[in-house]
Structure formats: structure tokens, C-alpha cells
Image (tube, rainbow, N blue to C red):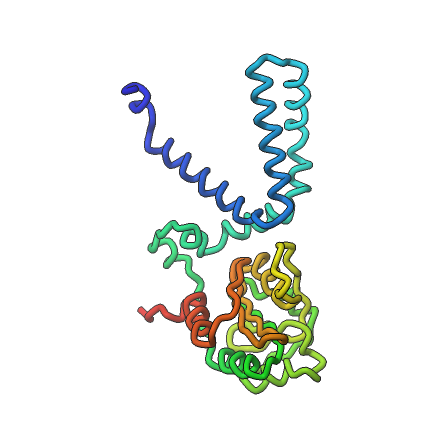
Length: 264
């Protein structure tokens, strides 16, 4: 037993820790999708392969081994969306804090801070909530989402609560699409966003699915005002918090955009 512990280095423990973090992150990305069942099936086949190898069942072991040796390309094709999302997640500045790794120095060094007047956004959302006026607002960070901006009407106007409300007015031609805000500008409206494939509550509409979808594939924030209930929801990193108050929305925006950091 003593000999065993002597050969365990700090780097070995770090290696195990990092692998655990990567596997946990990948699981979080797959959770709620059909890809989880595929991953479990692959793990089951892998365990069976190792078991047949240990029992010296050569024929079955060779067949399963051949499956894994040529199956890597198939796995890349099957898990292409998940791998893309995993790499995107890994490259985000908030990766460490999201998964419980509180390395403040690293987070502060890489944290992306923008200058945005959030008061008109919160005010407009509160007003639209009271009127049960549906809305989908996306606030960009490092990724300006130009490929989605091009699907809508370019506005390039300063942020204004009244303008936001007018764009999402029921008779407006742009009210069905998403508004994209970059910096202190309403970049575009009526934009088409990707929709999440996650299983969601029946009460969640297309706006909610699009809000989660855009935050799954980018570092953007998304705000939804339900047309049926008037409730405000907030999405970030592929997760959504339903039915929040305007004050909570304001706090979330301040926190996520780094507006609570004191200037050095």
C-alpha cells in the first residue's frame, strides 16, 4: 500500500481531475438530448469489449476492437453538434466558474466586459410584460452573431425603451423575430435564430426554444417575454430561468456583462 502511494504524483491527481471535469462538461452538454443514450450505448460496448478481451474471447474481442478502431470518424459525425458546443464551452471565459472551479484570477483575467446601458432594456421588458407583449432580445458579447444579424432587418439605432416596445408591438412586421443588441446599439430585428433540441416544458414556446438555442451556440444572453403569460425569462449558456422579476433581470445582466466590476 505504501509503495502504491509513493508512485502517485501530483500530476497524476491533476490528470484525473481534468479528465473528470471534461467528462462532466460533456455530460452536461449532452444532458436532455438523445445523444446521452448514444453515449451510454458506446460506453456499454466499450465495457463489453474490455470484458471479452480480459476473458480472451478473441473473435468477439477482435470484432469489437475493429468497431472502435474505425468508429472514431462515425462518432465525430454523430456528435458533431455536441463536440462543437463542447469546444465552444471550453473556450468561454466563464468555463471555470460555471463548473465550480473558482479560479478568480483566471476568470478576472479573461472576463469579457462590455459597456451597455441596460436600463432601457429592463424598462422595455417590464412594460411588455405588463402588456403581455411577446419579445425575444439577444445581447451579444464577444461573438457579435453577424450570421444571424444578416437574417433580419438592420436597424443600427441607439438603445431606446420605446423603440424596443414598438418593434415588438403585435402589428409590427418585425415582432416575430429576435432583436440583436451589440454594445449600445440595436443591431437588427426580425432575426432568425437556431432552436434548441432539448426537451422542454409544454409551456415553453418558440421564443424560449430560440433563446436557449442561441445561447447554446454562442456566448450571448437572451431575454424572452411570454406573449401568453407576460412572464420574463432569461437564458445564458444553454440554460433558462423562467418567470423572473425585472429587478432580477437587471441583476442578471449586470452580473453576466461584468457591469458590477469596479473600474481599476
